Amino acid sequence: IVSSNPSNIYVSHSGGDSFTTRNAPSNGTSAPIVEIAVEDDQTIYVAGDDDNIYKSTNSAWTWEDGVDSKVNDIYTMQVPMTDWVLVGGDGEVSYSDDGGESFEDESGNLDNAWYVVTAHEDFADNMIIFAATHDSSSDETVFLFEIGESTDWEDLVVDNGEYSIGAEYLNGALYTMSGDSDAVYRTLNATATSGTVAWQNLYDGATTSDVWAFDVIDMDGENVLFAAGEDSGTPKLWAYNDWLATTSPKLVSPGNNFELAIDPNTGFGLPFY
Image (tube, rainbow, N blue to C red; front, side):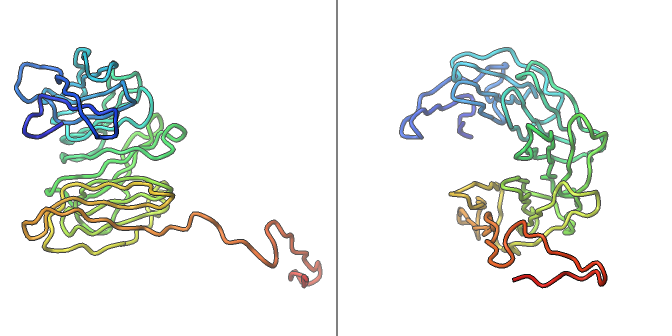
């Protein structure tokens, strides 16, 4: 979609070499689209400014009737797996597990703020989602919720007192980017017991920059963070390589699964050769 003409959808099946124009679903306004999420090359969901979700199963040629998302002022939408749709907006989060036919409100104890919603990379197994507060009026950053188990959202307590550009989970790491300082924070134990999630500050940010978009991409097994925004009025794209170890070290001595014999009299390990 293009901000200058959000009533159209542009579809490419050639990796962006060429595009075909499709009509967006009409809800009686001139600019109905506020967000788009793709499930596969045929199935597309769009969020309208009427807070309904519209679905196409033929690459945006035709659209099904809109369904109430149960979210006011939709801000973000994600399709973590087939038939699942996550929606975030003004103080509310919802999901659909039936291909957009109905939505369940899971706002719970969330404050009145804008929320960016993203799923855990093992969502199919653990049903965990995260909500980041993309709202300068909030000093809370990232929350966790387990669909079907949680009754309230758990505050993951990013110790910065700042709102978030967004949150992304990839290769065992949860990232969030501050909306105040553009600092980047990472945790490797996002699903740990409440109050024990440990965060690291990867990058202190730049006071002259204004970042409005944030994403993390797996590039050949490495987590690469991207941020788009402006620096002193100049549009810029930033990239950051997070060098995470993905292969454990090979032990020389003792080897893996080596069992150390214990002296029954002293309780100390016996020498090994």
